[in-house]
Image (cartoon, rainbow, N blue to C red):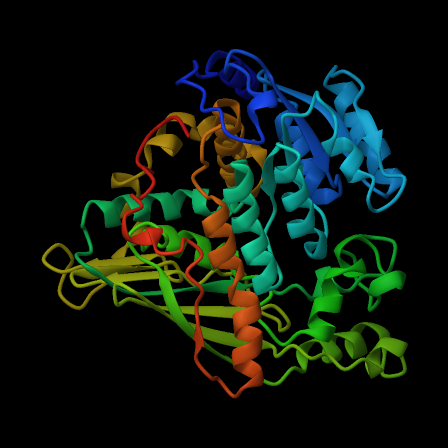
Length: 450
């Protein structure tokens, strides 16, 4: 970790020219100055961001907000241990975050709160002229998706969806392969969020990820709010870990776009079975009717003719996988099995072990900074996504994953809900760029700064 501190101190980039935009002019600063960051939400995820921010020499954590006094205490202890200045604290009520946003010594905010607060807090941050980073998913409804885009366009203030899987080492290597045409013209993708979350959706009310059958007011941490989405919604409620990387591979919103989507859901028995397993048949929660199907499958068509299959599978016992496949005219990568096939390079009809290919096309960021990133969380991904946010905010320029991406990726949730409710009826995807996807250039991912 000392090495990471030295790296961050020595590699703050020089200013590339500050773009002054409406709503942010009063917060413009040179990249030689420190970025003043406020955190809205310092639960487990927010605290992870806080710990990584405290390792940077180009950031001041000036304010924190949470309605849980214990989380505030933990955050203040981390800041004190890092010899940081005592932050301003907010959390008197659910709307106290607005007082944080009014502070002149906050340039940017990171929002890591329950999902239903993501859009409203991000919109309020942009309205206040604060560069906003929001955890996934960014929005729950189509109206909220448009709120993000409209607020960004009206205020000129930027926001970034903090989708860390876009920075996974194998994902960036495959993006490199696609950009170098290794697989030929791309045709088909698969992805998803396939993660047994039963121990997250339920616990004993004392331990965040402990065994137990409690949720809601009787639960703790994510079970307090996340499980309710499975009670109320039959939808893919968490699409971006899988779809974000695929959208980048397919240049969505930058020369391509999502056009339509169909979704289907299996029956839902997994959560009920888990409650009975952990709490018994007479547990009060055994009577709860969960609306969400256990396996939800969506298919997206793109303007450039690719298809994308997304799977949400979080309520049944299974090993973790995001189920990636990227398939082109000349070959494909599949994450499950760690395998690649390239016609003319691989033995006919035989898979290659993926790792030699991934090593050959390893991303410049990982080759340069991988050793510093590994302790940052999620195998190093958290270092790179936070670094992109900070460096973009310091220059006040559009981030790699912007408001249009946040809207498009998050729209899968409400569109899947409507499609499932209508027996798989196809849903038109809104064009959140209002036609500008035709001429927007892809972000330059193959670089070594951020």
